[in-house]
Image (cartoon, rainbow, N blue to C red; front, side, top):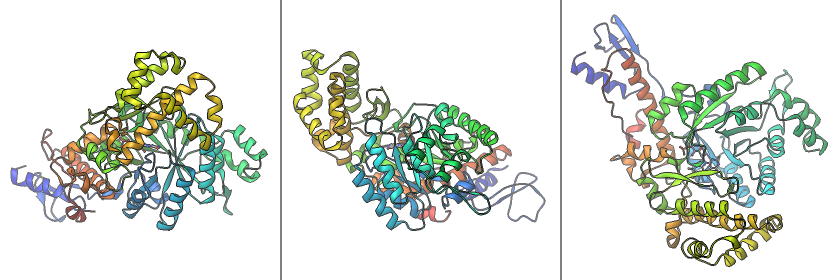
Length: 511
Ligand SMILES: Cc1cc2nc3c(=O)[nH]c(=O)nc-3n(C[C@H](O)[C@H](O)[C@H](O)COP(=O)(O)O)c2cc1C
């Protein structure tokens, strides 16, 4: 192909809705009438992922903005995603049940006829939260939850899933409540692809929390039809490699779908690392049914994070993130991924985790270490932190104070004060605690920043969550067409393909 034809071909690739006709010599034809050697078909950016998924949730794109703790994925973000025909999940975790209820009521009012989801996070350290929030979702008709951090299936999750399960006159099942489970491990995926555990179903029936018919039908449905396989990501993560995790979970879904003969297909969504069209192409080509993003959305205008912390995120590279102890599962040694650029949270939190591992109580901490953490990390004597912690739990969950009669548990509560406050300081942009900001983020934010460098989206003030998503879906369509052209031998194997994000005006021509 001569260079003029190659240029024409490349230009045409950027308009994914136009077919490209190829003549036998490899030249581009301008109409389909001539003797053609091939065609690069139009690919609509909305056609990726599972059609059934898009239909089920009434979406144009199989794209999900995942939950982000403490309302970082705010009601405004969920609304913006819905406006762009994408699926948003409200970040309920870490908020009071009252705040969760206010937000789902707002979403019910603002999004009639649209689907949205809200996070239901497993809270073994505060079982009353999980129970109350489940009630709120049931009372307010929230028909989709993103279930996260579950290490086992809990009664709350089962009663949510089974509420309203019934048989239609034609014998098909009506399953009003959908669970989108988020896992990083196959053993957990198996639990979600299985029906609700019989023991839990029986216990709920005995307590009158589900009806006899809901209990009888439970064995015909999986706990979750949609399961997000989360690779190395922001927030809680096992740092799993996407290209090994996603295919394994898809294979499992396939096995379970065939063995169990469910009425509905099991679907696997991709999460972790999705920040560029190339990453989306990998997820698409591996067979993922939907795409979940988090870190990139956090830097958008609609996110609940402070503007100053968004500015840090927008400058981060892929290596500016690191592991730190998780506040909610501190004692278990669980990890979250956080920004290390512009904040000292990670090394400070790791120091606390190390002291927790080494000592049985605050009193056992050597005087030198105690002085260092009081002066550099807490900025207060630990006795004062303990008083504040007691005041908080007297209100929220007094059983924690009983447990804190165990001195090691008391130390965990004190250290968790810092971990919990640190993310609030980042959300609220508390300047005096800037060095302690905990900003959850995965390498996808760095990949996005590198892609968006020198474009309209370099500035976080221009990052609108819906436009970013559409840019990624558009880019996916273009890259898919480029890959087809390469497979057909129409472009040189090693031709670099420079695709940058489009401005909203440019994007409007293609989406
Ligand atoms: C700031 C932040 C907070 C998060 N909080 C939650 C959460 O509360 N519940 C949850 O299921 N996932 C949470 N996640 C994970 C995201 O929903 C999403 O699965 C993940 O960010 C996708 O990977 P990525 O960060 O590479 O885009 C959080 C992620 C970030 C970045």
